[in-house]
Image (cartoon, rainbow, N blue to C red; front, side, top):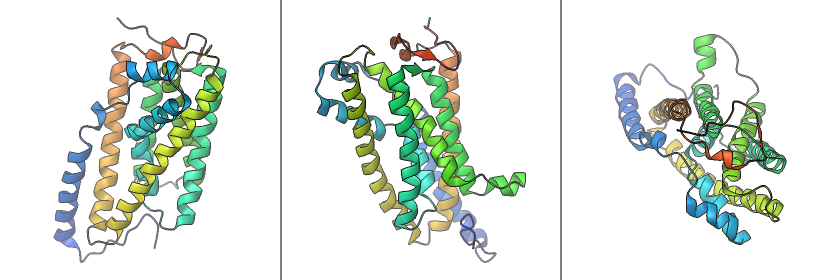
Length: 264
């Protein structure tokens, strides 16, 4: 049986449809607020980053991951069809390696981009993974998906760049403790990821053991697509409206995509 085919049979009929509809409504109700809950940088976090100790920076990194809904949704999509601990370790290691490379590298080099555009790209990675889970590339486009482990690593690079743009909003590039702060922030991100993964693995494991697994599989991944599209539209809306991109405070950075807009 294919990893993408949870085993739907003709005998499920209307019962499966009703179960899927109920699960979809429940999941969408939980994810509906996601587009409005972007993980912006508070003034308190910025002050703590500038003046606090390294443990404070670790805590900020963990909080950022645990409130980074785009990162969490992507991780949920990655975990959905991973059953063994070995598979989970392989894929999460690839994602962690990817986001660590760009988080450390881009921040150390002062490379940034418009945060709204980076977050919009991250939202599309959520959509991609959910589409891959539902086997939509083969079913709708007639093409095979690229190697999943490679794609998770590449998407990790994008997520790490998003983390870097947020980190550069919270610290000044001429801070004498910039290296230790970057490492502490990354350590916090990893701790937050471990906590999130522990909860997700437990919840997905419980789902898999119930009769709701098949409708939940379809409903959650459909909801991930909608949530990703909502996040994508929200971030593009902010960019188009000329909302202030706080990454501009990293005055020594190099803009990669489009000039950072100063706002009205």
